[in-house]
Every structure is written in structure tokens, then in C-alpha cells.
Length: 361
Image (cartoon, rainbow, N blue to C red):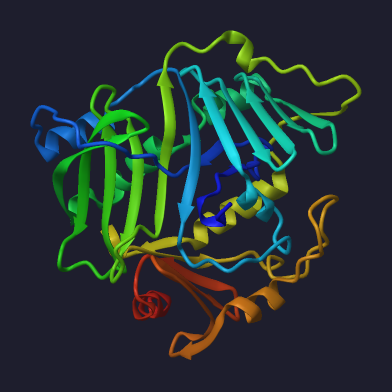
């Protein structure tokens, strides 16, 4: 299978809570003639997307990724999530979710019922059960945990770039066998960005985004496409969100808690992080923790030990300027600079804009 078209799903463990959202991105399936739908203004379509509440659904997902990211193999923990063959996501629309992943002969199942998260791996016949205390769930609103699918990603993008964009409706399309409007956001001429446009296929009935395509300058095909290849809006059986480990499975139980050290690091990173510019040419700058660039010993099952400095020199380009010196990393839709003293700048912008952001006090 073409690795660019493999499904990519990652279950991200929150650094402070020990639990995280289920992240799913996918490649779309469009077929047939463009459907005939009632005319709608771009503003009305945007408003309907921002307020959409499609409720329970299940859908198959995959990704088309042509970002030009380096293949780091197992050098970075979690990189194996890029090699998933297929995925299916289920949600009851009220905080419960399930993701089923397949990679070759192995499968992974992640189930969240609101107070518990199960993560089962068939390759090792092992499961981790994480219990979420009520006070943590309430304080951090885990009942409304993020399911980062095309809908979530689209709403976040609209909030960030809408005011700096020309927004239009460019016809219709069939996505996941459903009629959809094509919403297009194009950066205004004053925006300094490597992106040409963002296209969103919006379900004509539920107003839920079914496909998100990011196109960069000088290309005709998307650098990244996130979408459902199949989706069904319907009540989900309650049993989907109840998990029972298979016989003989090794079960590890833990309780989600706020780790004081992780929280302190997160607060420090937040204080050191700022946004330079706005809209399409926003650059995020900050400083990585002091030990982030130190060699890391791999956990069981995560492959070789990781040496960040070796990765920097292998995949980055050595650069310098009035802002200092460090490594530049580029993709088709943006880039990032990491300086020798641990500062960083990243955005969907030309490298000169990154350097300017690093030079700001």
C-alpha cells in the first residue's frame, strides 16, 4: 500500500493528565458527478459549520500525506502511528468514543466511555486501563474530549484564518457517498504564507466537514488531505463503548492524575510561547525544555534510543543569522527553526518570516 494513502491514527497521551484525545485523520473518497444542491452564501456556510452538532456517527478514515516530512522510523516514540493500514472511529456524540486500528496482522483498540480509557494491543495481548477521577474530568472537561477529525480541524482553522481570507463556495462534491458543498479559503494578498488555499467539503445535511484539503503554492495536488472515506450518522450501540479484555490479556491499571512536574513544564512552556503575526502568516515561537534535546532511552516496544541532536543534524539544514544559529526544517506547507540555545519558530511561512519572528523580543 502507498504509505501516503495509509490511514494515520494516533492515541495521544496528555502530558499533564495521562489521558488524551483520539486523533484521527483521513483521506477522502469522492466519486460521481457533482451533486445539485441549493445555493448558499459563503458566510452562511461558515456559520453553519461553526455551529454544527452532527451527533453520533461512525466512519472509516485514512490520510493522503505529501508534506515531505522525513522518515524517522522508530527513532521518535509514537512514529509507528504513521504506519496504520486502516482505522474506524465511533462516537455517541456525547463524549464516548472508540477507535479501531489495523496494521498488518495486528490491531489496536482504544475505547473511552467518559470515565475510563482502554488501550488494547493485539500484538502483545496487553491492555492499559486508565481511570479518570471525577474532579479531573470536571476540571479539564474530558467529557467533551477532542475527537480531532476533519470537523474539529476545520473549526480550528476557520477560527484562526477566517478574517485574513477570501472565503467562497466553489461548487459541490460527493465525499464518502454524501453530497457536500466545497468551501474555499484563500489567503489575502498581504499574507506571507506558503499555502495557496484550504478546501473544505461540508456535508449538505449535517454541515459537518467531511474533507479538509491543504494546498501549497506551486502544486496541483493537496499537500495534506484529511477526510472520511465512509461515514454513517446514526445512534451507536452502547456496547461499542464497553471494553472487556480478551482472555489471557495482560492488564495494567492506572489512574489519571495531574503530574506536578509535567504541569510545571507545561506552564513554563506556555509562558515562553507567543504568537508573532496573525492569520495565515502566524508564527509560533518559544523555547523547548532544557532536557528536551538530551538523548532519550526508548521505552519497551518503541525501538532504538533517540538522540535528538543526531536527528537535528540528519534532517535539518544548518542556518544562522542575526537571531543566532540552529537548524531549519521545511515541508511543502511550512517550516520550523530550532536554535542551538533551544528557541524555536514554526509556521506555514517562508523561512525569512521564521527568522524575523526569532529576532523579535
